[in-house]
Length: 329
Ligand SMILES: [Ca+2]
Image 1 (cartoon, rainbow, N blue to C red):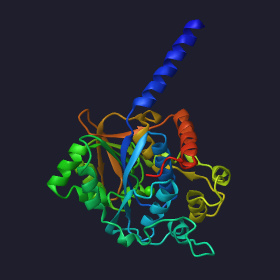
Image 2: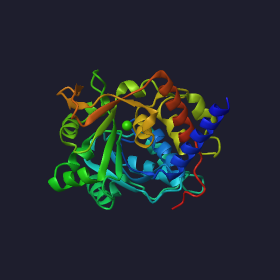
Image 3: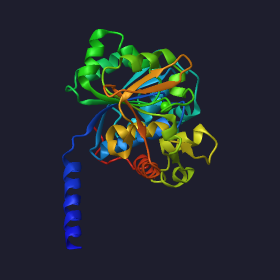
Image 4: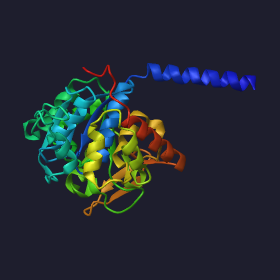
C-alpha cells in the first residue's frame, strides 16, 4: 500500500514536471473554415491549449475560398485575446459558397453599430495569400519546430511544394503534418480528399516530413454533444463558437469531431494510438490506400473506445474553456 502510494506520488511529480517543462508545440492551422462546425471547435481547442502553455498558434491558413472564412477566424482569435495571429487565404480555391456559421457571427452588430464579435479583418479577400504566408512563417522558425494541422483540403500545402526551395523549407522546419482526411485502412472517398484530389495526391506523394492522418472513422466515433453547446458557453452572453454551432445546423444536434482529433494529436500525441508505418496514396476517385512499409513516412490514427471517450471529454473541456485573462499579446 505504502509502496503504491510512493510510486503514485513519484508518478504525479514526474507528470507535473514534464507538463511544466515541455515546450509549447508551434502550430500552423490550415482549415476549410465554414464547411463544417468541427473546424471552429478545433480552433477554440487550440486557443485553450495555448492558454495552458501546451501550444503556440503561429498562423491560420484557409482553403475555403470564401470571403467570410478569414473574418470568422479573426473573430475567434480576437475573442480568445489573440487578434494578432496571422491569417492567410487561398486564391482560386475550392468551396466558394457562403456559409451561415462564418458569415452570421462575423456580420452581427449591436444596435449602436459595433460588432457583437470585434474583429479587424472585414473581408477575407484583403488577407495575405496563404502559400506566401506559410513560407514566411516557416522561414522564421527553428528547424524541426513546427507541426502543421491540416483539416481541410490539401490545396495550400500542395502548392507550397511547387518550388524546390519551399519543399526544402518544409523538410527542415516541419516536424510532422497532422492531417484530417481519408479513411483507414480503407473506405469510401472522404470529403477533404475528394474535394481537391490532385492536391491530396501530390501532398501524400511529395510531402517531405512525416504525416499522421486521422481518418473519417476516428472523428465519426467522437461526437460533440448539443448539451455542451447549450450549457458550457454561458460564461459570456455572446460566444462565437456557440453561435456558429447554432448557425451551422438546426439545434439540438451532436456532431462528429473529425478535425479536433488532428489538432488534439498534434499537441497531445498520447491521446491516440498509431498504425504501423506505411505509405498512403490517393486514387482518382479520392479513396485513400494504405500500404504497410517499415520505411514509410505515413501513419494513421487508431483509437480504442476508452481513447474515444477521453477525446470527447478533452475536446469539450478545451473548446469550452474561457479565454485566458493573460492571453492578450
Ligand atoms: Ca474541416
